[in-house]
Image (cartoon, rainbow, N blue to C red; front, side, top):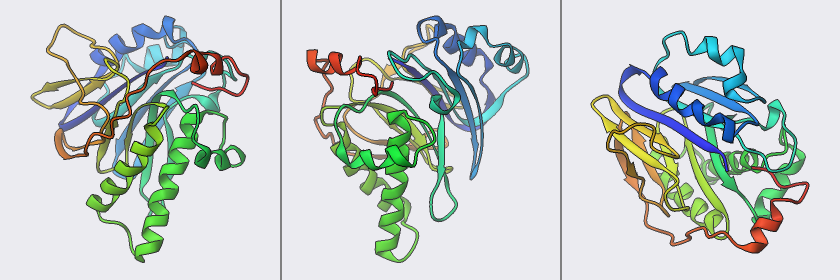
Length: 257
């Protein structure tokens, strides 16, 4: 299982302390690390296919003050599959209107045939990248149908339905951004937590400090902007449960975490 971290803030803040605590978990998730800082349509992504605790680059990067309003981080545990740059999170993709969508994912897509077409166009081989490609295609198709760029509430409703369908039988803990709004979804209990501070919201797979972290409401899409929730979808009810069949799947050569 991978781990994900993110911030959605109303005021810029230095996040080095939380990032260092998050990346301390890398010995249990040694197959890659990543960091994305979002600033509107501009996204800066840094990542490597190696243990975050052994990365000289990340060590020196975190010695510099990292002041942000919106960011994601990821550490990867790959049961099987290639350990390479193209499979490291975060992933990003532009939609038809130039918005940059950025995503981190903790989980596995066991069965969702609509994503299979992206095997042939994705840069790497991770199922998480296919989720992002499918998501952006859905938004593009929605806009084509309307003849204009979808309004935020129209995007929310469309993605709420799509992620609910995707979550059935699959482990879909993810956070993503369209450059303006910050989205979160979790359907596996006790695996996504949130901390509210004066400057905004911090998210992490596991609590990182003794502060009052709370579990994120799960089986629904949550949307935030500048540290405030602006949309909450209805529960789709698809709680992920580990099964013997899914455990066997993870050892197939094409499975990716």
